[in-house]
Amino acid sequence: MGYAVLPGVLSPEQTRRTREVLHRLSEQDDETYGSEELAKLRERGALRNLAAADDAFHPLLESSPALDVVDALLGPKGILNCYDALTLFPGQGRYPWDYHTDLMDVTGVSFPPSRIPGVNVLYYFDRVREENGATWVVPGSHHTLADKPDPDVMAPLSVPLEVEPGDGVVFDARIWHCAGTNHVGGARTLIKTLFTAPWYRPQMDFTRAVPPEILDRLAPRAQRYLNVHNVPPTSVEELRWRLFRGDAVYEDDSAPTRVGV
Ligand SMILES: O=C(O)CCC(=O)C(=O)O
Image 1: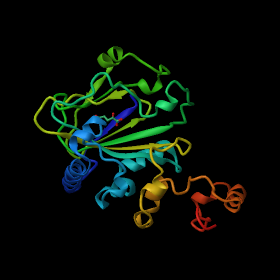
Image 2: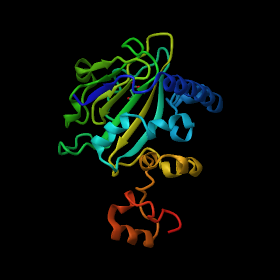
Image 3: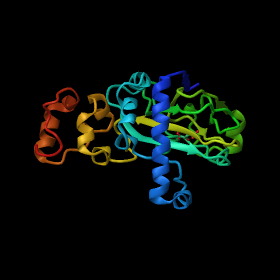
C-alpha cells in the first residue's frame, strides 16, 4: 500500500490550538506579502519553515507519535526536508494535473526494499472528504519506476484519503499523490512534515533558517531533524575529527560544532 492513516494522532486540544495559529499566520502572510501576490506565486495559504514560525509547531518534531513511524522507517539519522502548511481555498485544487511524488529527484530510481529514502507525514485540521479536497494517493505506486506517469492513468487508480481533524497520514514519500479540489465553502488546511534519509537535500538550510535561540531550546530529536548534525564540515579540524570519529557526532554531544571548532 505504502500509506496509513493515523486516526487522532493529534489531541483535540492540540488540533484546535495548532489550527488557530495556522489561521493567524495565514492572515499575517496575506497582510505582509499581499494575497494576490502570493496567489500569483501559487504560495497563498502555503506557510513555510513552521519550526521557526511558532512554538505550537514544535511538538510535531519532538513528540508526535508519528515520529516513531518515521524513525522506524528511516533509521536514526533521518532529517526534515520541509515543514509547511498547505491550504486549499474554496474553488482551488490541483487534481488531477499535479500528480507527483515528494522525492522527484529520485523518481525512477530503484532502491533495495530495506532502504526507504523518505517518509511524509500529513496532519489534517478539517474534516476532509472528496468534495473539499481530499489528498489522492495511488496505493502501491512507491514501487513504480515510472518517472512521468500520465495523470489520466494515475487518477482512476487513486483513492481519496478521507480524514477527521487531528488525523494524520503517513506515506512512503515515493508514492504518487495529488491534492484534490475544494468544491465547498471553507478552506482545507494541512501540515506537511516530509522526512528523508540524510543524503537528500532539504528544502531549506534549517540550521540557518531557524534562529539559534529556537534551535537551542528544541529537543535533541528535533535538532537532529533540523539537520544540525548533518552540515558538511567547515574547517579542516572539524573534518579530521569527523573522519576519525565517523558518525559519533550523532551520539556524542561533545562533538565540535560547525562553528568554532
Ligand atoms: O494538499 C494535499 O492534499 C497534498 C499535499 C501534497 O501534495 C504534498 O504533501 O506533497
